[in-house]
Structure formats: C-alpha cells, structure tokens
Amino acid sequence: MDALSNAGLSQAARLWPRHLGRPLLAAVLACLAAAALLLVTRRLAGGLHQPLTVPALAITGLLLATVGALIRQRTNQNLPSAPHPRQRPRAVLLSAMTTLAILALAGAVSLPDTPRAGLLALWIPIVVGECGWLVHRRRQTRPTTLANRPQPCRPPAGEGKLPQAAGQPGRAGEPLPKDISQHIQRTKTKDQRDSCCGWVRADFQPRQRTETIHLAFCPPFLATPSLAVQQLEGPDLQVKTAQVLPYGARLELRLNRACDEPVQTTIGFTAVEGQSAATE
Image (cartoon, rainbow, N blue to C red; front, side, top):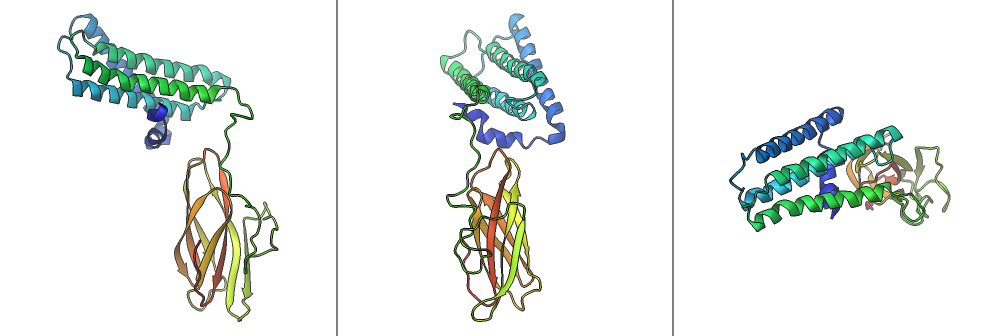
C-alpha cells in the first residue's frame, strides 16, 4: 500500500539537489496549494462545468499521488521521523497541508456529471497513497522496542574471522583488528613465486551502494599477477575485479541492498606471480 512512497520514489527524491532541497520542497508545495485554491475557487464560483475524461482523471490521480509521495519523502529526509521536538510540528504541518491540497484539488475536479469510472480512476491512487503514507508514518513513529527496532544490515554468518586460506594474514579464526584499515604482507609461495596478500576495509555511507578499492603492490610485480579476492566481513555484496596491473589493482564493490546506516566491509585479497586465481 505504501509503494508510492517507498523504493522508486525515494530514488526520485534523491534526484533533487541537496542544497535546494527545502526551497524546492516549499516551491512544489506552494504550487500544489495554489492550484488547489484556484480550482476550488472556480468550482465554488460555478466556473467548472465540463467534467474531465476518464484518462485525464486517471492521469490527475496518479500525478497527485506521486507529487504527494515525493513531497512527503523529501520532508521525511529533511525532518526525520525522530527529529528535534521543535521540528515535529513542522513535519506534521507539511504533511497535513499536502493532504488538504491534494483532497481539495481532487474534490474540485470531481464534478456531478463525472463518470463513475473517472471518479474511481481519480480517487483510488490518491486514497492508496494517503493510506500508504499513514501506515508508513505509523511504523516510523511507534515506540521502539526490541521487537520493532530497525535492524542494521547484518554480515554473513562467521564473518569477522580470518579464513583458513593460504596466503591470508593472521591465524585461522583470529578476529580482524578494528583499528586497522588495511593489512598487506609480501611473501614467497612454496614454489618461490612472489605473492602479495592482505585485507582492506571499505566504508559505505547511508543509501550508498557502490564503492571502489584501490590496491597497491609495492614493489611492483615483474608482470601482471593473478588476483583472488574474498569478502571477509560486512553486509552481502558483490566484488568485481575491474583492473589488475603489475603495480596495483582496482576492485568495485556493490551492496546487494542499500542500508539506512553506515556500514563497513572487509575484503581479503591474494596476488600471486604467474598463477591462475578465481575471483569470489
């Protein structure tokens, strides 16, 4: 029911420039209120006689529901669900103004001779959007308990331990130090090939899904090495080896889903001279 105000609309809301967020929000809400006031005035003055067609009413309903969801989504980003107490009345006022403007505008174009199919096409998206927002808001503002507390993105089971894999630093099962952002070892394999192994951490900000890691091989390999990578800890993600050179490599990370709070992941790697390795 609250699909109009969630995933797709949250991405659309992020297209608004951050530094223009509040002025743009105020301008859109003012335009919506002005349009509602104009149509209500004309309706009361008897200036509206010809009802809109069913397709026009359907487009109007979808447009009003979408604009309302975008306004509330942006309001929710500027004034979160648990803001400073002085901001709570402002968020409630903006939501109430949005609802009143949408209902007034839809009521103004609901003329007596409007076909029933047109009224349904107009009001169903609006009612679904309003009810969906009420449910979404209720979930955000209800008291936080152990049962309904938002859970962070959880890492895979057994994370935070160094795997029992050749070339990885540290002992098997040893926790990764939290105060170290990267660890690199330069060693020789049993057959005396040059090897560089270690792990590096990457941070994701809220709603961020992609990140890039640059690895440095110092001193450089004599030729392009083979590289194997593995996620050691953090939320579920995909690791892609974008480029491997004798002096370094570039890894591209992509979270399987965006998180609402900062998260961190740790990627282990092993670069070996003249060996075929797979990327996990």
